[in-house]
Structure formats: C-alpha cells, structure tokens
Amino acid sequence: MGLLGWSGHYLSNITVGVPMLLLTLAVADCVHIITGYIHGLHRGKSQKEAIAYTLELNFIALLVTSVTTSFGFLMMNASVSPVLVDFGNLAAVGVMIAFVLSITLLPALLAIMPVKVTATNMEVDDQSMLSLAEWVIAHHRKILPFSALIVLLGAVLMMQNQLNDELVKYFNEGSEYREDADFFENQVGNTTLSITFDTQQDQGITKVEFLKTLDTLTEWLYEQPETNHVSSIVDVMRRLNKNFNGDQPEYYRIPDTDELAAQYLLMYEMSLPYGLDMNSRIDIGKSAVRVTVIMKSLGSQEMIAMEERIRDWMAVNAPQYNYTITDLAVMFAHIGATNMASMLVTLPLALLVISSLLILALRSWRLGIISLIPNCSPIIVGFGIWFLISGEINLAVSVVISMTLGIVVDDSVHFLSKYRTARMSGKSPEDAIRYAFVTVGRALWVTTVVLATGFSILATSEFVPNSSLGLLSGVVIVIALLGDFFMLPAILLLTDRKVYQKKVQKHPERQYE
Image (cartoon, rainbow, N blue to C red; front, side, top):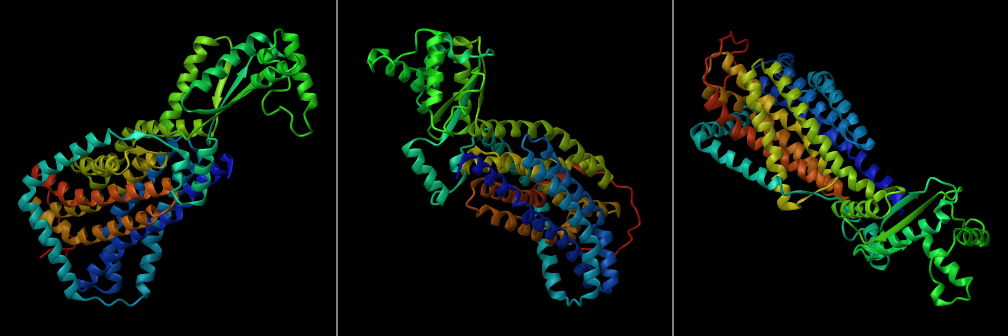
C-alpha cells in the first residue's frame, strides 16, 4: 500500500467509527427515559402517566446533555484536519437526532409495548443507591482531599505525555500492512521527506553555484543518523561528468561550467526511455528541483526535529534560495501538534459555553460553577493514566478532550438536576444527595457501562488510533462516573449549604423513602 493510499485508509478508518459512537450515545439517552418510565410504573402510574413522568423528569437534562455533547464534537472544527472536522460535525448532528428520537419515537414504542415490572428489584436498586449515598455523606470530608490528590497527581502525569505520531505503528504488529512496512523498513526505510528548491530563474538548477550548494546539502543529509538514502540531481550530474570524461574517478564531481551542466542534463533527458522523464524531479523550465530523503521510521517529534535541522542548515548555507519541506510524514507530524494546540485554544471557550448552558439549565450559577470541577477532572486524570499506559499522544488521542468533554457533562447534569429538584422542595443537602442517587444513580451507572462498553469495542481495533481513542475515552467516562458519585456530592455537601427558595413539589411521590 502506497503512502497516499495509506492516508486514505487511515482517514476512512477514523470516519467509520461514527456509527458505533452514535449508537452508544443514543442508547445512553434511551436508558434515562426507560429508567424513569419503569420508576414511574413502580410508583403505581399507568403507562401514559409513566411516560409523561419520565419525559418531565428527563427532558431538560437530556436536552442540555445532548447540546453539550454536540458542542464538544463541534469543537473539532478547530482541527486542521478536514476529516476530523467532518467527524465532529457528523457526530454533533447525530447526537441531536438521537435526542429527538429518544423523546418521540421511544415514548411512542413504550406506549404500545406491554411492560412487566418487579417491585422487589426496584427496591433493591433503591436500597443499594441509598446505601452508597449514605457512605458518601458519612465520608465526604475524607473523599474531597483524596479526590483532590488524585486530580493533582493526574495533572502532573498528564504533563509528561509527548505528542508523537509514527505512521508505521498505527497498525499493530502481526497485521499484513505492518509486516510489509517492517520488511521495507529493514531493507530501505519507509519514511520520506522532500525538499523542493526554487531558484526563481529559468535553467537555474544547471548553475554550478546552485549545484555545489545542492551537493553540499546532499552530503550533509547523508551524515544525518536518520538518513538511509538521498535522491538528488547532483548524483546524476556527477555520474554524467565522469562518463563524459572517460570514466575517470577524479571527474566524479559537479561539472565545471554552467553550459556543461546544461548540456549534460539535456543529453540525459533525451536518452531516457518514454515514461521515465524527470518531470517528477525538476520542472519544465529547469528552475526548481526536488530532493527526496529516505529515512528509517520516525515519530512526529523526530520528524519535526529533522525538519528544523534542515531549516537551520538552509538559513546558514543557502539563504538565497526559496525552498519547501513536504511529504506525508511531515504533514502528519505537524497535524498532531497543531490539532492539540487548536483544541487547547478552544478549550476555554468550550468550558465557558458549557458552564453557561449548565447555569441556565440548573438556574443556579453556583451549581454551574461547581459542576466544572467534576467535569474537567476526568480528562485530567484520564490523560494522567494514559501516560502510564502509553505516554504518547497521537492524532486520534488529541481529539479526546473535545470529544469527551461534552459526554462527561451528561452525568453531572442528570445528577445536579435531581439534586436541585430536591433542594427546591426544601430538602437539606444530605437529603438532596440521597434523592439524586435513588432517582438517577442507577441510570448513570448503566449509561456509563453502555458508553464504556461501546468505546471498549473500539479499543479492540487493530488500527492503533481507533484503539487509543476508544481506550482513553472509555477510561475518561468511567472516571467521570466516579467523580459524580464521590467528588461531586462531597463538594456539594461542603459548599452548597444555603437555603433554597422552597417551591411546591409537583410530584411528591418522587421520594427515596
């Protein structure tokens, strides 16, 4: 598979993950609707009443979580890769479609399908969630500093990750492509870098001054430890000069005059068989030439370092010539770094928008600000764990921040919406925590299992970017649930002690007792 074909295969592998991702997110929405529906049936409601109950209970939370998830995907528009932009836009639209179907088609199906519920199972679930709530309430003063320590440790480890993409290692060892690439690597080298010189004058590449500069660069490139071979026009000029001088070894050098170099090149081009011209190496006006360096497989950091050394050499030895450094490996080396930088630039905007949405949805600036802590912590801890797993951030991993930021908000929104409902009915923070655990705790861990399982399936891919994306996303989502079950209640119990303006509770049966 050529490099161009490989890049197309890589990009198609990224986009093929969208259906699986949307299926997982859609199931998560449905879990909340169905859980609320069954909860209503256990409270003695009819099917229609239970459907109305679950929609009223979950509509705002599902709307906010869908919008924040979509916005997280839309953050990918800051990426320099058009494919990642399309991935984000497609996923954002799909998430909103899933939301619409979960509040329209799913309730309609529930209305016509008979459902049997077992009160004993619900009571057991309620009691287990209530027991967890009691434990968190009893130990919240210990949980918070322990959580802060974990986040701090995660931040330290996260900073140790290195941006590095090595194209060959995008496929696991044992795959057909990897075996072929490793064989080629051992024989020749499978990473190329192209330097295009533009002399800005016709026949400029046949000037002896230019050829000597190119010859010096070629020798310097051969001295670099990464280089296996350099394809340059100076090799042709040296060989021709030797051939036209009786094959004497001392003439294996650049021709002495511009005219001689031009004649050698013309005769060489005229002698080439049809289809083997030099248009791939020099332009028709003989003003520009391309030098190709074949190297061993390099990571993105090594490739960027090699590029910088070439630029430094050019600045000192050939400042009079225009040049460009290109190739697929160079492009991917810069995409990863640029993509991560663009994600970090848009991160403050995303946090501002998401926190604003949470403040509006929860109608409380205090809860909106508090929610940022458990929403940001999973990403920090997740990337800290990633340092222990891999330590390298490739192109796919660089989009995890934007992709998961909107997803991890979901649990916080559902938990805080139920917490606020209880607080507005006059409950204390402790009772509100109990209420939130009983009403939404079961749905949260079920959706987390669904999401983590979906991403874990992606993690089994032989294509390393997809497996890295799935594994890290699954880790972040699991950590998000732990944060919402332990860190968030502890923060609320310590900071949200004010008395809420009591409102009449429309559904007094929504009690944990």
